[in-house]
Length: 256
Figure 1 (cartoon, rainbow, N blue to C red):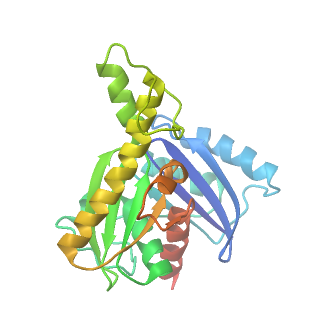
Figure 2: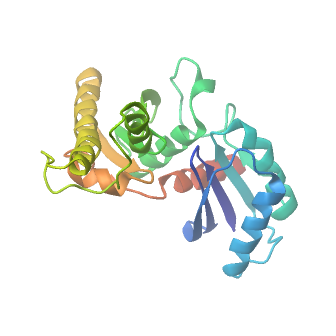
Figure 3: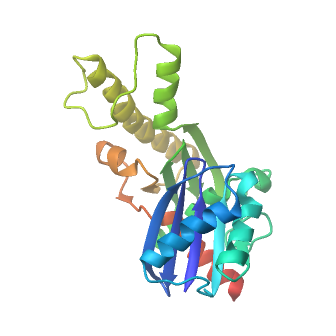
């Protein structure tokens, strides 16, 4: 059994693998102020509900964390409640993928993990679009090299900015509107967010291909991927657990 943990800015996803099969998964709110014991209480309850008594002594724990304050917390969680050390993805971790970023230490662990999983699936030039707190685009060459990408505000961040800066606008449900030209404030905001981000995806993928001069496959992940992907022309597949899959692959490469 392998425990994979993806700590994002907004949500934390925990997955349990039996070999290559994801048997259990949970999604929690990320709280940078939480302690290892607070996470331990949650994990104990979740694992118990799945019939996994703690400490369950998994073969390993692998973590991608983009919240620096939680790195040590995740290590303590693994040691105290899962009975093993944790592999934290970071500079020096064997990923099997050359990193061509000018300063590899600046790249978020989740972005590298996603790139590894996407290339393992596609074995060709590809772009990963991750709809999270930020909307990120990560480009991998046909030789399996991580080059870099694009960072844009996430949909929820964009809506928060509108609400904070425009006195007469308010939060709306993030759902697909019936028309592009909204005839209510709610529909107009939904159109700008959903269709606007779909157009951004298609436009940026086109620019990436023009610059790199190589066609690229496009795969999406993240909490809002299922909402935006159907409105794009270029996203070919959505994989909710792409990051967990990448974590499993990197763990296996480091174990070998």
